[in-house]
Length: 102
Image (cartoon, rainbow, N blue to C red; front, side):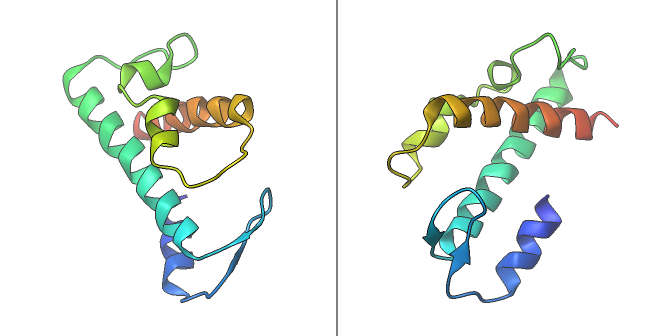
Protein backbone atom coordinates (compact mmCIF):
# COMPACT_ATOMS: atom_id res chain seq x y z
CA UNK A 1 0.00 0.00 0.00
CA UNK A 2 2.82 2.41 0.82
CA UNK A 3 4.40 1.91 -2.59
CA UNK A 4 1.07 2.51 -4.34
CA UNK A 5 0.47 5.75 -2.44
CA UNK A 6 4.06 6.89 -3.02
CA UNK A 7 3.66 6.23 -6.74
CA UNK A 8 0.38 8.15 -6.86
CA UNK A 9 2.06 11.07 -5.12
CA UNK A 10 4.76 11.28 -7.80
CA UNK A 11 2.21 11.62 -10.62
CA UNK A 12 1.55 15.29 -9.88
CA UNK A 13 -2.22 15.04 -10.09
CA UNK A 14 -4.36 18.17 -9.88
CA UNK A 15 -7.41 16.25 -8.70
CA UNK A 16 -8.07 12.84 -7.10
CA UNK A 17 -11.18 10.75 -7.70
CA UNK A 18 -11.71 8.55 -4.66
CA UNK A 19 -13.66 5.35 -5.20
CA UNK A 20 -15.62 5.84 -1.99
CA UNK A 21 -15.84 9.60 -1.70
CA UNK A 22 -15.95 12.81 -3.60
CA UNK A 23 -13.46 14.44 -5.93
CA UNK A 24 -10.74 16.02 -3.84
CA UNK A 25 -7.30 17.53 -4.00
CA UNK A 26 -4.13 15.45 -4.33
CA UNK A 27 -3.47 16.28 -0.68
CA UNK A 28 -5.67 13.29 0.21
CA UNK A 29 -2.88 11.03 -1.09
CA UNK A 30 -0.34 12.77 1.16
CA UNK A 31 -2.71 12.48 4.13
CA UNK A 32 -3.27 8.77 3.52
CA UNK A 33 0.44 8.16 3.08
CA UNK A 34 1.13 9.93 6.36
CA UNK A 35 -1.62 7.91 8.06
CA UNK A 36 -0.25 4.55 6.90
CA UNK A 37 3.33 5.56 7.76
CA UNK A 38 2.18 6.52 11.26
CA UNK A 39 0.54 3.14 11.70
CA UNK A 40 3.68 1.39 10.46
CA UNK A 41 5.94 3.40 12.76
CA UNK A 42 3.77 2.77 15.82
CA UNK A 43 3.52 -0.94 14.98
CA UNK A 44 7.30 -1.20 14.61
CA UNK A 45 7.78 0.55 17.96
CA UNK A 46 5.30 -1.77 19.62
CA UNK A 47 6.88 -4.91 18.15
CA UNK A 48 10.37 -3.77 19.19
CA UNK A 49 9.39 -4.03 22.85
CA UNK A 50 6.56 -6.58 22.97
CA UNK A 51 5.91 -10.17 21.99
CA UNK A 52 3.97 -10.66 18.79
CA UNK A 53 0.29 -10.13 19.59
CA UNK A 54 -2.63 -12.25 18.51
CA UNK A 55 -3.99 -9.61 16.15
CA UNK A 56 -7.34 -11.36 15.88
CA UNK A 57 -7.95 -11.26 19.63
CA UNK A 58 -6.41 -7.94 20.58
CA UNK A 59 -7.63 -4.44 19.76
CA UNK A 60 -4.82 -3.40 17.44
CA UNK A 61 -5.28 0.36 17.85
CA UNK A 62 -5.04 -0.07 21.62
CA UNK A 63 -1.80 -2.03 21.29
CA UNK A 64 -0.09 0.77 19.37
CA UNK A 65 -1.95 3.60 21.14
CA UNK A 66 -3.28 5.07 17.89
CA UNK A 67 -7.01 5.45 18.22
CA UNK A 68 -9.60 6.33 15.62
CA UNK A 69 -10.27 9.59 17.45
CA UNK A 70 -6.60 10.56 16.99
CA UNK A 71 -6.96 10.10 13.24
CA UNK A 72 -10.23 11.98 12.94
CA UNK A 73 -8.79 14.95 14.87
CA UNK A 74 -6.43 15.50 11.93
CA UNK A 75 -8.92 14.65 9.20
CA UNK A 76 -10.52 17.31 7.07
CA UNK A 77 -13.43 15.15 5.91
CA UNK A 78 -16.87 16.28 7.00
CA UNK A 79 -19.90 14.07 7.19
CA UNK A 80 -18.00 10.79 7.19
CA UNK A 81 -19.48 7.51 8.39
CA UNK A 82 -17.66 7.13 11.71
CA UNK A 83 -18.80 3.55 12.32
CA UNK A 84 -17.42 2.48 8.95
CA UNK A 85 -14.11 4.34 9.28
CA UNK A 86 -13.61 3.21 12.89
CA UNK A 87 -13.71 -0.37 11.62
CA UNK A 88 -11.46 0.51 8.67
CA UNK A 89 -8.90 2.00 11.06
CA UNK A 90 -8.96 -1.11 13.24
CA UNK A 91 -8.43 -3.32 10.19
CA UNK A 92 -5.66 -1.08 8.81
CA UNK A 93 -3.71 -1.40 12.07
CA UNK A 94 -4.33 -5.15 12.15
CA UNK A 95 -3.12 -5.60 8.56
CA UNK A 96 0.04 -3.58 9.09
CA UNK A 97 0.85 -5.57 12.24
CA UNK A 98 0.28 -8.83 10.37
CA UNK A 99 2.45 -7.60 7.46
CA UNK A 100 5.29 -6.71 9.81
CA UNK A 101 5.06 -10.13 11.48
CA UNK A 102 5.57 -12.01 8.17
